[in-house]
Image (cartoon, rainbow, N blue to C red):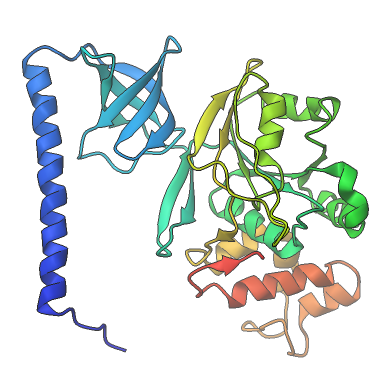
Length: 340
């Protein structure tokens, strides 16, 4: 199917917007050049992005100061967790003029379905789940595929452990993930003692909390960082889901070491950029048998001699994992995959 051609008026509007953006970028860069020529910028320093507010960014300097900075227009999209080079100006602000190579990048789809970066240099993704609102296992599997695609270590954390009676089957599901080799923790944001092992786990490197809105990501961070003021959302009586309260991805330093990045609640997670090889990384238990079928193009649904179906019958692969694998594989061409 050929692409729909733009009308002359539509093309004019697009060109106008692009020209306006270019003009703003040139104006900003011209101002920066004027500051350089006037000697208003200090020596370059290393810094860490801790929050992004549209055109401005909060950078943590090497001495711990937080500096509000503007960004040169020739830089790529910057995100929380980026290591940058910045120069202080004469008004207690600064200018970011370079970014270091990233060791990892976490992305998610925007409202148009386009991938955008969320956080950089992430060492572990903590998948927060809860009995209420109930986190479905297929959503957990999709998060695991995403972490495998980005080569980021996943951790499954069951929060609100005191509500497990509302979804008792989750205990068995968590044990199954443990048997598959995944790191699993159980805690409650109401119990500081239950979070001690989490404090030790996040004491090194950068951690990102992901999960449905309402599962308690910000509540957990409030326990880990009691001196920070993080809004905790209420549960909607109409939907039983949490209201989105954290609007900007922000990085917090843990007093004992390590950093946490709190990002907006994720209800949809895009995987259309995922190949079947990436999918296999997220399902190592399934992939172990998938290459031993009688037919090389086996769909693992109805063909005779399917090694995966045999593995399920023999108890080597969980039926629900195979179903989840097939569902995700069949939806790779979708713009987004819903976890609700």
